[in-house]
Length: 123
Image 1 (cartoon, rainbow, N blue to C red):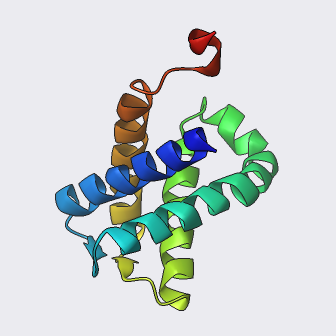
Image 2 (tube, rainbow, N blue to C red):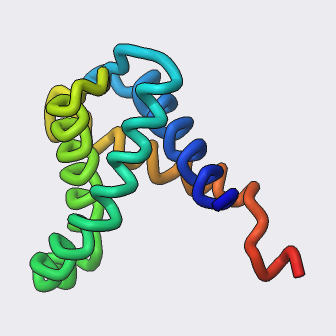
């Protein structure tokens, strides 16, 4: 449970960094908005992304994996749309902003994830 909460916080921080650096990403609200969006983004990545990845597998292979970057941007755009329908103050203006934002979210999440020890390292 602790690891899940840490991942949620890391995703919230990554979304905050993306919102600060990418002009087309807006956050209206505070920490609660970022945590809600991190939860929505996590659910989208857990439920929708595997299906989209499976369906676009030939395209991913042809582009040598680069289409995964487009899928990441689309998942962030979908999470933004879902957040908007749920009244969360997070908005992305277009696919370009979502693409760059997804790159930043991935890099920041990866970097911050390095700070969390693995369960195997604790033993």
